[in-house]
Length: 326
Image (cartoon, rainbow, N blue to C red; front, side, top):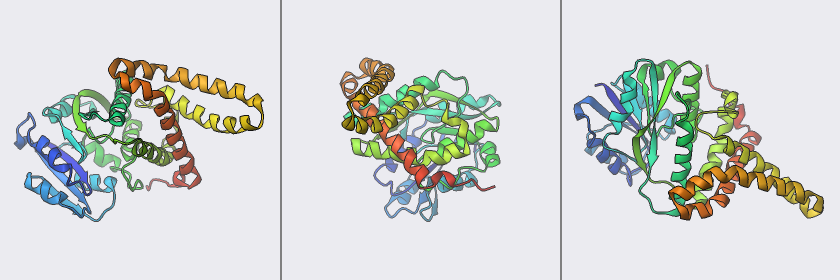
């Protein structure tokens, strides 16, 4: 068995069937890969659906995706381990595209991409947001940021690294932390935009903001473990980090401007810089989906605020004080 596909799943009965069907229809022979579903304490039919598709189903009490993926890695027979999620439907050539860069023995990991078929405005914005990140990632020969909705690693590299950090109890940024750790250990990872999985993005702005808040909250732990990533990684464009700073500065200035008009001028400068920093994204959205371009500026503000508030909450609640075990 050359390839193992590991999928953590928790109460995923509504989506895992589509995921399993997509994996059944891959372009490489079914004898060349196995599918492992780690049922993370589901109370629905997740395990039964996966088993009907021939997946190896492992069960555990609800412990989070980091623990589930580590369990899948331990059971995997493949020299290459691929990861996707229970709400993703891989394209027919996904496995083939994911393993292609690993023919080069110098490469330890591969990052794929999201696509969506949704018509909802929030989902369409999120897709353009991802595509903006992918354009940025594509500028680097090697990457340090691999998302587990479409990730591939040599199993030996995963075992040597200790796997996913189980301090992350929910699906958040545990995949970022692993890829940062591998990159710092000298492993080379690459981006393959032809390795596609189709995903159901959030369809409400509230869920979008909640997701960004959670990312910001748990990012505090990642930054404690990998402080240099506060300045640069191969996934986060410079203007997003600038926008988070500007959003944070705008709050006290807005409050002070209610007390003294002298603060209106610096507030205007901050807002102006934010708008200028958003122009590359707005232009990209205009070219790809014009209705989304019209609402992008307020949503970019929402994104910056949600991530920033999550970071502040994470530091205030001591999330960053958690340390990785030896």
